[in-house]
Length: 536
Image 1 (cartoon, rainbow, N blue to C red):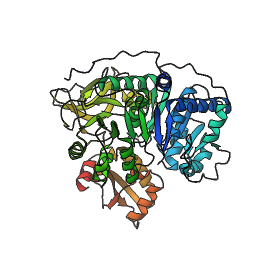
Image 2: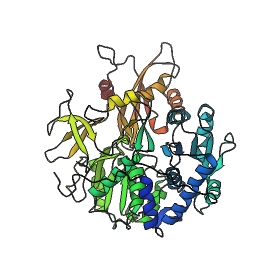
Image 3: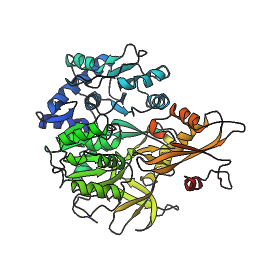
Image 4: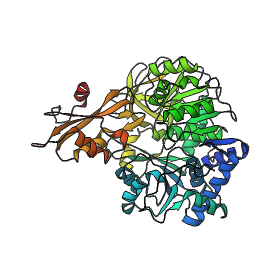
C-alpha cells in the first residue's frame, strides 16, 4: 500500500460547497477564474455575477431552499455563474446533457420536479417540444457569450418559448435586487446527477453538500504533493454537466484558485488545440477518446506541455497505447481513476509520483472503504474478482424518490454496490475487469442497452432486438444493435437508425444494425448477450 497519503481526513460537518466557493471568491478575488471566447472572469466577477443571479432567482422567480433547477448548457461562462447562483439561492442543480432528446429531457424534468430551467438557446427546441408536458414554469435562455463582454453569434431561440427570460437580463435585474444568504447544512441536496439504470430509465443520484465537500477534500489530500493552490491552470473540455469535470475541474479547481479555460466544443479539435496552446495547462482531465483525439491532431506538437504536472483520466478505461503516446508527448503518465455519479464521483485514483501506468484505477481515496464481494457476498481475496462495493462520505444517500432502487443499491452494512467487477492486486491497486453488467461506454458516456432497445423496439417491423458494445477506434465502443424482423417486415438498417435518432442522444444511437433470423437465447428464454458479443 502507498503510505504517502492520509488514510482518513477530518471533515467539518457544517461545511458546504457554497461556503468553500465563497471563501475562494474572497481569497483569489483579483485572479482569473474562467477564460472563454477571449474573455476573462475574475473570482470577484464570479462572486458579483453569481450573487446577482441568486438575487434574481430569489426575488423574481421565488426560489427558496430545496427547489430544484435544471441546467442544460455546454462549457460556457454562464455555466459556473448559473451554478453558483443557484446554489447560493439555496436550490439544488439538476444537471442535464445538452445532447438529450425531448424524451430524455422530459423524463428528467418530471422526475426531478423542477419548475425552472436555465438552458442554452441552441438546444431550446428540445425543451419547446416537451415543455407542455413538464412542470416547468420559468425558462432562462443563455447565449454563448453571456456573463462576458464577448460578441459571439448564438443560435436562435425556439419561438414557442415565448416569455422566456434572457440570462443577461436576469443578471442585470439581479444586480439591483437584494441577495439574501441562505443557511445551508451538509446534508442539504446539492445536485441531482442523473445516471442510466439497467431498467433503461435514468435515476437521479441525490448528492449532498457533504458528499461534494468530502470528495474535493479527499481529492486534494490524495493529490497534495502535486497540487499548487493559486497556481493551477486547467483546460476543461470534459462536459461540466458530467460529475467528473463538475467535481474535479469546476468545484475543486475553483477552491484551489485555478485559472480555468473552458472549451465550449471539444469536437472542434482545431479550436481545442488552439486553447491548449494559449493555456499551457498545469492540470488536464480527459477520457480515453479525448486524449486520443488530441494525440492524433497534427498540431498537438505545438502545445507547450512544460508546465503540465497532472493528467487525470476516467469515465472509461484509458488504453495503454493512449497513455504511452501521451507520456511520450508530455512526459507525464495519465493517472487513471474510478468512480460513479453516485459517489461524487471519485473512489480510487492513481497517486502522483507512483508507479508507471499499469491500467489500474489506483488506490482508494482517504476515508474511502472499498471491498470486493463474490457471488455469495463473501469478500474476495487479493487477486480474486468481485463486485466493487464502496463506503465513504462521498457516497450518495440514495436515488431521488427511488426507495426500491435504494434498497438494492446498498449492502446491509452500508456499502454501495457499483455493479462493476474488480480485482485488487497484492499492493492494493484496483483493476476494473468488467463493466457494470451490460453497459456500453461510448466516448466516456454510459449507454444502457435496455434504454436503446426500448426505443428500437418501438419501430415498426421490429420483433426482437438487443444491443452490445462493439470495439471502435474512435469512441472506444459503439452500439451494435441486433434485430429480428417481424414477419413480412421490410425494415432497413437506415430506417431503424433514423428512428433511434428521434429518441436517443447521438452517442446512444446504434452505429450498426445486424438482422438475424433468431436471437440466441438461454433455456429460460433470456437473450444471450455474450453470444451477440461474439458476433459483434
